[in-house]
Amino acid sequence: MNDLFDRHRRVLPDWLALYYETPLEITHGEGRYVWDSAGNRYLDFFGGILTTMTAHALPEVTKAVSEQAGRIIHSSTLYLNRPMVELAERIAQLSGIPDARVFFTTSGTEANDTALLLATTYRRSNTVLAMRNSYHGRSFSAVGITGNRGWSPTSLSPLQTLYVHGGVRTRGPFADLDDRAFVDACVADLKDIVGQTRPPAALIAEPIQGVGGFTSPPDGLYAAFREVLNAHGILWIADEVQTGWGRTGDHFWGWQAHDRNGPPDIVTFAKGIGNGMSIGGVIARAEIMNCLDANSISTFGGTQITMAGGLANLAYLVEHDLQGNARRVGGLLIERLRAVAAQLPGVREVRGRGLMIGVELVKPGTDEADPQAASAVLEAAREGGLLVGKGGGHDTSALRIAPPLSLTVAEAEEGAAILEHALRSAY
Image (cartoon, rainbow, N blue to C red; front, top):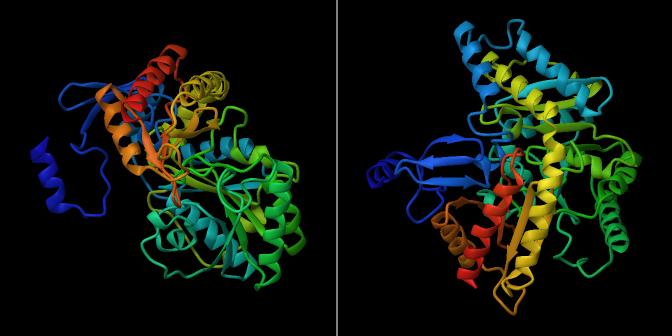
């Protein structure tokens, strides 16, 4: 392992983040478990950053990918592609967007990049509204709208970005308000920003902020925002890279918690749909998707082998009601962790819905972030046989819990027990 780590450091960038003091090489997985190169088994509560959505080595996906690889792996979008058309049909039908068109990419970053291209072209504006504490990817334009300093290496951008309050319920200037007053204050903030700038192209928002620590506003905030946006013709882009496909349990898409005024104009997706295969994409109304007046293709977006895997994965998800499982098992897991948190002064909040759960850590007796404790808990959980993630925005530190949606009650209890021990060891 040390040899591989040394080789990694010699040929890969210094800014390429690695978890753990002694980095981990995962060699294989099955169900909700993975194994490292030393033969240690771990319960996976992070799923390759919310990417292994159904299960590791899911037979249905493995079979579909293997069979497709035996026929043809790739041909590009310059040729008709049956698996791509079939997956686009399924996604368009599930999207809730009328007259939907789907464009496939290879990542969530590229999906958000494409959404920004569509919105700014359609609206003839390079001004974009984004949420504070947000994260939308690592491309130049995606970094330019990311409202999280820890993931924004440059202030240069092709876009003029204006940041709106509302993505974090329990911190910031409106934290002490009740839900109704919080929404009203955020809407007033949005109106103020829109009134002071050239007409923006779009508001882009994660229904639950992923890298920011699984934070979210009260249900209905983006519906209230939509009234302001509609009055000015501003598009709503829902970044569903982490929240999509039923992970929140209550809804198939995160935006459905804010659907009073209809679906978004544009939805971006990635991660879970491929179950580890490299799939991202954009869904938009035809008039928006078709607004480009130049040729475009995608060499690897929609390639046959990833589309075959995505089709099999989506079919398994729907047929086995993994959204319902996320609601049931996730609800139990959240309550179990909240019971633990009530006994620990360093746990400020357990939040989330479904199998998208954040545990925010602070220095005991304060409201100050404790990133050292977050790292210590991460290490202790690994020692106990559990993999979790971490994140957070301005002056926050949080553990991120997002296992495959097929997680069983017994596995949820196993993971909760390991995490409880890890938390107690830090506090």
